[in-house]
Length: 123
Image 1: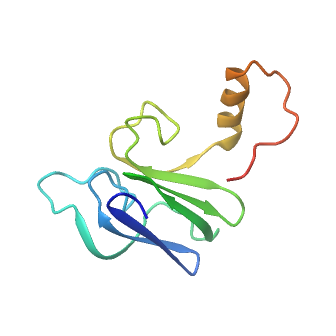
Image 2 (image 1 turned 135 degrees about the horizontal axis):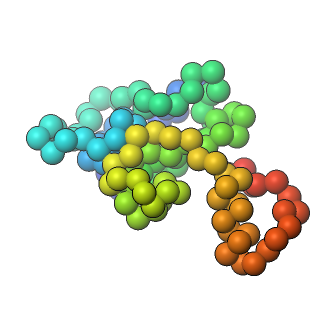
Image 3 (image 1 turned 180 degrees about the vertical axis):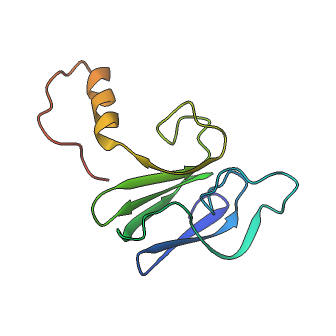
């Protein structure tokens, strides 16, 4: 569970309830302020693949993550602090796939490593 939202996996699909202020519930991006941002009934998260079932989820304070059976990773919700892996994203980002190899390369560069001894770790 996140700060104000909960993720539920049923049959490889992700549903969510709670605050959708930053799009962390529905995966559609930031909810306009004039709309009720609370989701009382489970909402199917948009933007996740239907042909690759979700096997793991994680909820942050105002962002969410899912990993599929094939190892693909998707993030959505608040990204203004870089928690979605891209500092150019708005406060509320729609569901998007993360390139783990690119992130692993950034990590190696940060420590001065030049060789890739192993493939990017799966979450």
